[in-house]
Length: 453
Image 1 (cartoon, one colour):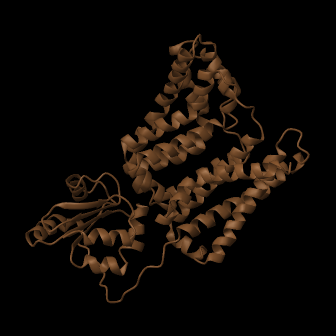
Image 2: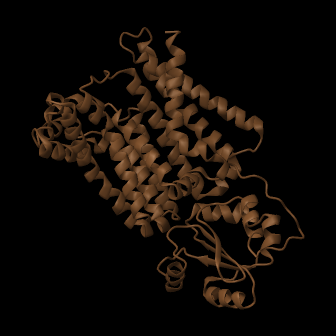
């Protein structure tokens, strides 16, 4: 046991980091939920990669993983006369899964207008937090998310052998696995809806389906035997629960920045303390997983260690990542005047007048429900260097909170605005020089402004 403890500890740490990766990797950019949203919106590769990872983790859950060898046997992949045919059958099966999930991403993106403005409503945020906490509870074992076994057995006989059977069975498997993918799917669909990007939504859900189906493809193509379920599955469920619970609290925190300011201290001592708390939670979770091994001498510790690990792991993760994401102190200069923003109704007149006067223009498209927009308001625009440089620009703020407003629609169409935030720098000749579709820190924004003549 002593030799396996470091291995299990490392496994849980890796799983926890995978589930919290968007937050940890982008901590320096501000609010982590919105930071990942911004980054993924600009980089389909990152978005697709994270979606694939979530799909793969879903495939490792206890209600999907045991079905891999049974399913590939039903549509005949393991009995194919050649590896090529086995790969083709398995690929057709995965395509069936993708054809079920991809429309969800498209639908979520098309509903983005409703979702974006709804996220400014504290009741909506509260419901989302409750949903994520419920999903986390299911991962911690409070209840099981699965279709009735009788329905599972009936669905598993649909399709038959061959390509047609493989495709149909893939569609059915998507339905069977849906309750298990729910914890990851809910967060992805919510995020996709805020991007309003149909292509990105389709790519993400297709990648999720590939991640969910990769084990089926490997088993069907190479006729490999999947490792038996056991303690490692409990580790995956535990880490998933921590990640989902963190997201619940992150939604609440990001909808009300004042909360973070009250509970997060900027000191290094605070960061080290909450980091240690998180590690304690991981250590207790590791003992829980070790106790789940077959014939484990500490089997009696499984449940109490799991219960004891939840609070330090979730609270530690939330506080530590929030500490990493705490905004840097804004450079104050009483001699730097505040940016005098003109409103959307004056936008076209000001842009035209500025072009005639050979004056550069800064246009800011934002909304109250846009977390990255709020970060620009709190961190970038108050910066003395930004204010000083902005003095030579004509500055326009377009409040797109009400995206049904005719003026907003007209300006969004003219400047090809898809998501928010958008910062546009136009030179003295009336030509667009730079555009930012994400939160941009003061240093980077000042450098871009200085390049505009």
